[in-house]
View 1 (cartoon, rainbow, N blue to C red):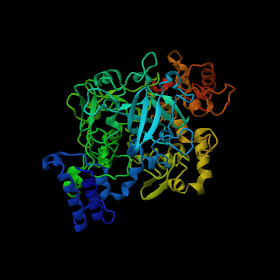
View 2: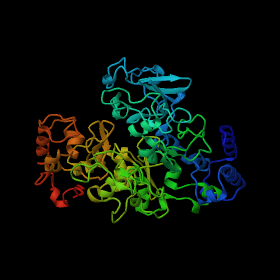
View 3: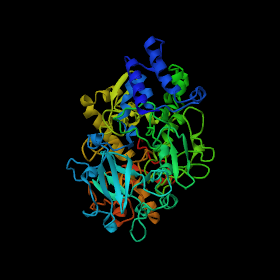
View 4: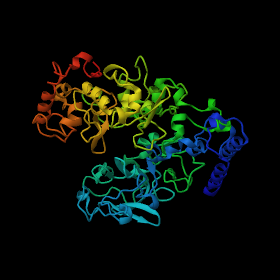
Length: 592
């Protein structure tokens, strides 16, 4: 289907959209009927009626045409993980696509950043270090004699990291370029504002020379370069796996569902698989709600779409867990996401399938066997916690996170929680996110939910109650984060890029005793040290230790020993031993 036809149909649907309504609440009015018919007609030009009824992924713009109050999804990281670089978007605040390492207002590709002319991590590869460039609206990376177009970025400005997916000039394909998209050796880290190496061995040989040039057979590229995005990554960065496989050359490919509706100026839509059709990529509505074609053909019948709010806790949490977990496909471990690589089938929400039947655990953990050492393992952490099976109120991920987006933070932390009609403004940094649920019981029995809702008026009383619980002064919004719930219960134990800044979701307050108990295995972080005492305040004259990837130095041992006097066996604040809960099991809730 031509781009012009697609955009014309988008205009038709927009014209009949009328006032914001929910298709699931369709009352049969003519305006809603016109809207449903217009969308159905778009789909009928692309698929057979049977295919549509069986379930096709149609893209989030279809959903937003009716559910306009959820258009905030467009500004989430779910919607923006993969984006084609566009000059008009490269440096926009909050929407930037390409890095600007020297902050001169010109993105590094337009500037023509040449790593051969600066000192960087690529020095060992000079004179064949990467060169970034821009020409005729396209972005390129040159390594040696190969100039490779950038298909899209993974991550944008403001994200932890940014990577670049490339097509490589080769011999043996119809257009002289690889069919697959390969992740470049260039990674930009936002926190350190510097470029770092990303698996350079896939691009340079043992002599630090480029592996590929325009005479490289495509089969050689496929055999040597393991940074293949369609094999390892795409399943968690798209909506609906239409087809994934290998060409005869050995190259992997991913066939995406076509984007029937999209905005021409939206960088989140592009031709991922190089077939001339704009594709659905990124995590859209249907990743959580299931394929939407039958719902549209049914004029918005709510029985023909999945509502995760109505799923039982385990399946609702699996909606998030399908991507927020480090897995391998089954039974062969071919792919890095939940997928049956023999039958070519994916887990789909609301079908009654068991997510665990679609993956094997590939998580990286600290020596206790519980705490995550690598990122995107929140689901595994959460299953180790007491939350999903809490006897009084089984907890769902979406109670703390709003997958449709917020206006206040990129982590989708809820900024409002409604409880029995009471609207509570919530934030992580002032503890209201946690107190919205934890008020009225345990150590917080003296705090009412009405007090949390009127935080500014009741901050002193809330602070007194929380300080009794934490044994620390109350200053959660300051840089130290004193008595901020997440500092103890969501310590940063895992890394993204080179930074240890990913929070554990076991909600365990990790004891200093664990740091000492696993010294033969390199130790492990504890909440007290990683959040404050190893990096921000030298309370015990042990010195600072910013190398938080390792926990077996003399400083780590001395600090953990001192901290155990307060939190550990015989501790004066919390008398706790890891043997009380079983080694590697859930630690203290500190509610006693």
